[in-house]
Image 1 (tube, each protein chain N blue to C red):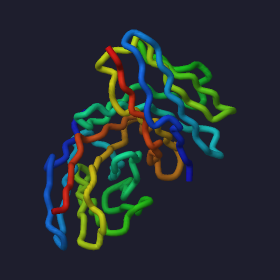
Image 2 (image 1 turned 90 degrees about the vertical axis):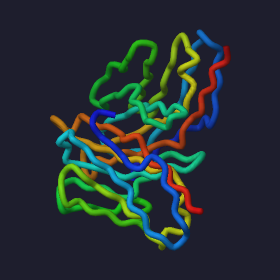
Image 3 (image 1 turned 90 degrees about the horizontal axis):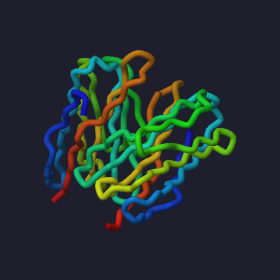
Length: 115
Length: 113
């Protein structure tokens, strides 16, 4: 089964600065989907950004962008101009289009934003 | 989120009791999943269902049971055989064209007293 690793249990960033959250994954598949989810204190899972593995261009959503390195199996999230509302748990996830279509999650990174 | 509901939001159970968590969706999604979240850990897959009247075990199915009698509903029963059931439970649906849509419910916090 695929595994997802987030090596940073906690990160902090100063408001308005930029922070990068790391994610690596293990798979033998060539086609798949990658996601970053945000989980605020309400615990609702909010989709931040998604990337299809067949696309070479890195996905971008406003202040959020990814650095997708397929050969290295790396999928980091960059948050620019950090805001207080960005403070949350962030989960990296992998989904295979084959078999179960279920999602595999990393252990999460808790992001703190300092005013 | 996106037409998926979970109830109740908070649930308390005495040891030895079975409890059922509800997950309902009006998205016409074929696939539904149950995940468990513990502090300091990511989400772990309990059960999933790709179509009505069919479901499969995930990574941590022991002590849980599910049913999928209709497309809109995928209830999860936490049985007394589950040794450490206190956790946050999340339901996920997947569907749409190419199964590109997926939404999480708001979750249920289960506490064993």
